[in-house]
Amino acid sequence: MADRIRVGVVGAHAERGWARAIHLPALQALDDFEIVAVAGTSDASARAAAEVWGAARAYDDARALLADPDVDLVTVAVQLPRRDGLVEAAVDAGRHVYSEWPLALDAATAERFEAKARAAGVRHAVGLQSRHHPAVRLLRDLLAQGLVGEVLSASLLYSLSTPDAWSTRYADLFDETKGVNHVAVVGGHSLDMFQYAVGEFAEVSATLTTRIDRITMQETGERIEVTSPDQIVMGGLLRSGAAASAHFMTGGPRGDGFRIEVHGRAGRLVLVSSDDSLVGPQFTLTHAAANGSPVVQVPVPDAYRPLLPGPPSPVSNVAQVYTDLARAIRTGDAFGPDFTTAVRVHRLLDAVKASARHGGRETLPL
Image 1 (tube, one colour):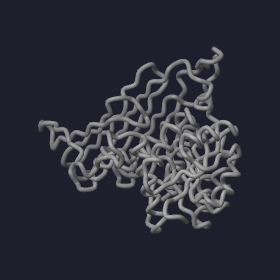
Image 2 (cartoon, helix red, strand yellow):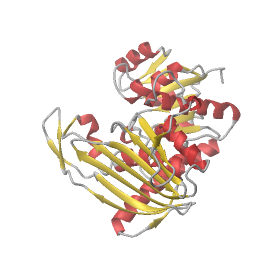
Image 3 (cartoon, helix red, strand yellow):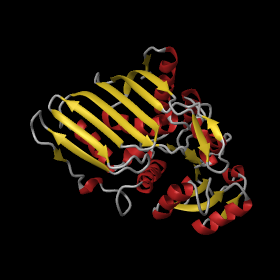
């Protein structure tokens, strides 16, 4: 491998898309990486992306990029329903892999990906970057340091505005079979962030329901049926024994963002966002030592500042994942979020869906 880790990006575009908005700017800002190849949906789009991002090679076939001997790391930045085995193919080609979230349709498939990557000796990352928001990392550390004492309970509330009309590009979000619906995307990103800070669920019970049953396609005006849940309600126990709950509210015209509240024997910590953005919220953290004591804002120390200049953003969060992945590739150090992280989140989402089906409680494996 060259001094710089050579990256091929599947799903690159010159003008739009998640890779264009997040992955490619993050990679371009980091000295550890060099963008050497891109793959798009056509030769023209791939060449346009290569010109914008300075890649030497452009492919209209993602599998040709995987076979490129000058690629060390493959970023798979296309949506799950359109990946067509690319994650496994990248591992089979001996490439390190950064896969967007969700990693798979279910935990069993994610477990297979993890086992295959481990056997191949390649490093792997998954796009659960919200845990790297400085305020989330600070909340995790303050809890670990015992600022509020033993944690008794923790709750997550997230309300997200969802307009009635959507581009056809997002139609899969409303199909429960596609694996990129609100349970997987809103639930997956948020629950990983929540568990990263407060600890993992040991058992859970859940209710899912769909309250908005039709949405409009902007391009055609067609009204399509919504089969995925827009209300996700869950509760249970963390491995620490603390009670925990989460409610994800989507489907309405206005959201109020995140609220994470942690009660401990010695006080309370509350993390709230100023907007309902899923990928780049700006958080405020407050602390109260006891009932009646003043609530004080907890400033985020400089040591937690984003890796890139400016306020916390999805680009800086993803840049942190890439930086940690580069270190793991070079040293063999432990790293996350990786496919092991993805397996744990997929297991929790599978448990949520199973509990909602049978109405009982699900126990998570260790």
